[in-house]
Length: 326
Ligand code: GDP
Image (cartoon, rainbow, N blue to C red; front, side, top):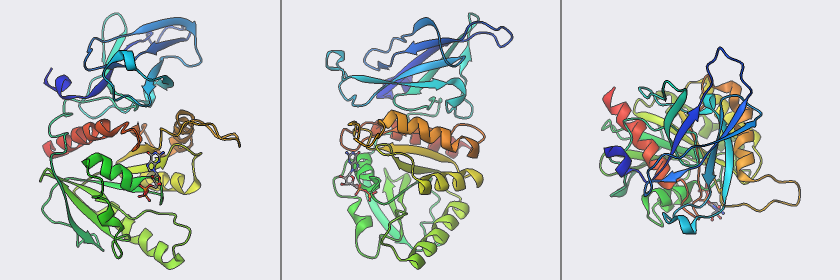
């Protein structure tokens, strides 16, 4: 149970499933999230016909720092079917005799936790190392790295600062001459967060954009220490074509990708029929479904409330620890 005590917030899912061979009425189960301060698995089956078989409703809290249940904020439900979960390698979503599936899922995400989660998840120190203009220029010490990429204004700098708990570290990447570079930040002297240039900036010169495209794609394809790309998508607005294209390119080139949905605190419905973050997140999944063989991992975040911060770090730890072992 070492991992459990290390982890900030988990959902325990106990998902009753029907044997594949039977045609029982479809059921929807409500699974409430639990905090680690109260690690008892909770499962509340609702015996009503539902829209999808073997589906679960994962309760996603949008601002959930408080570990005191009396101060729990309002919660939003996201419905996930089992095949939409991200199950890391060497991870069992175990099924008991009475047909109950058991998994530990990161809150506000579709990510099942593996035995690799936990070690070194906390950021103890972070330092800017260098800006590179080509993949070959990047640090050559062989440490594993995660690349953050997204449309300009998606909230990449804010997220980076929130991850490392430093207000202005990401400003380094915004200094003149560095916005179009691959910027490496070393974390705990053992891994890198890599800030890549934002894309889709309307005012950027056409040539600059093409150049950037070439060099970023070269980095994705030829950087052996790249563990996963973290593609940031603004959840407060409907999916943008350029984000879908980006996700599609990563999928087609089999670059490991985690989707980070940003600005999930922006909850007001817009007058022009705008959707809530949960709906935009669901829509985005649907739109990219065909680009991936299995559902990519995703996490809902907010740099204003710090939602998702610890979850991202924990997910990074499980990817990194697995990568180091193989
Ligand atoms: P970047 O261009 O991707 O680095 O984006 P920034 O981090 O500079 O953020 C762009 C704008 O979005 C700024 O005005 C931020 O204050 C705002 N922003 C970033 N993250 C969030 C968030 O999680 N919630 C809200 N409401 N605003 C955010």
